[in-house]
Length: 94
Image (cartoon, rainbow, N blue to C red; front, side, top):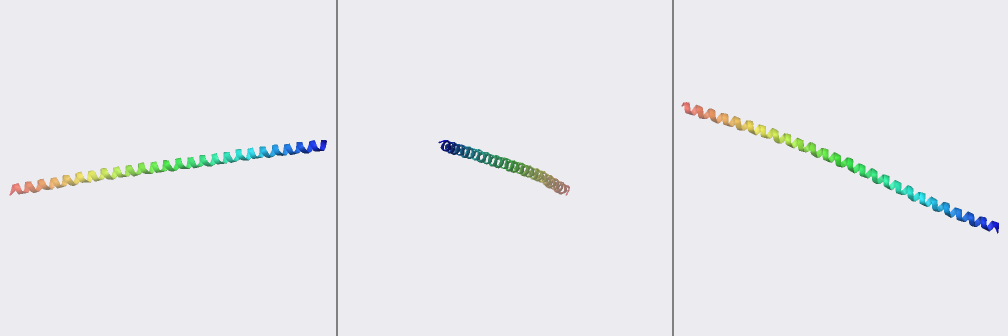
């Protein structure tokens, strides 16, 4: 009789141990999934920041090009106007 009780107790303890192991395995799996999710989120943030910085650099570059073009156009216009005035003055002298 006591042997039967010991067997039942041992079986219950084994089931309890297995249940605890399953719970711990699930907790470990959840933690691993969360850690992976966190790493992926961090990587996405880093990539987004890189893209944003790259876009900002591109815009600054484009603005610099536009400003240089405006400056060159203004200088060209000034030179054309200066040449036109010189020609006009030369023609008035004749």
